[in-house]
Length: 196
Ligand code: ITT
Image (cartoon, rainbow, N blue to C red; front, side):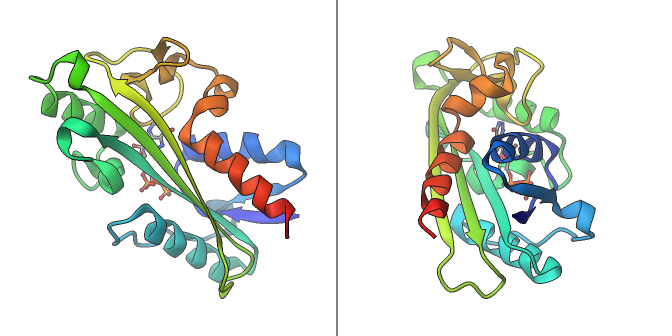
């Protein structure tokens, strides 16, 4: 069936679309349905994802899937976390956020540059669904000293993927989906959707 993807992030839309299509679902980006951005005022991925999914379901009348995600760096006490998209400022580009992160970690040695990506997916059958499906995926790795690779989006060029011994931006989308926070969360979601 049709569902609206409650995101304006092209990188997420590509990854989610590719992972959902083989399941017989028809994901439609919210922008194509005229849905504007929702506010993300909360301090947890779960709350932000719920707000985005509810906004999109309300505006379209379709089931909605939202992704709230980010990078938690241990040496920074979990920052940038829910602020990952705007670490270098409200309208910062991916490259600016990456630069801000490298600057913040300048004096931190390799062994202490551990980090994890988090992805919370929220699926609402309709805007007032009292039992949303909520899934959380994690991807541990560490932060490189220099950006490497041109694939992916966001912090991928500085995220070292231990499973493949290279940066996340050097992976194909298929490889990334197998190990990433988003891939893991989505497989959990699909298991739960099957039970409904
Ligand atoms: P939407 O709310 O429209 O979905 P957004 O980019 O504002 O898009 P978030 O608030 O969830 O979404 O921010 C997530 C940020 O975390 C994203 O902009 C990236 O900087 C980073 N991020 C999340 N997943 C990532 C991934 O797979 N690779 C690299 N960076 C990622």
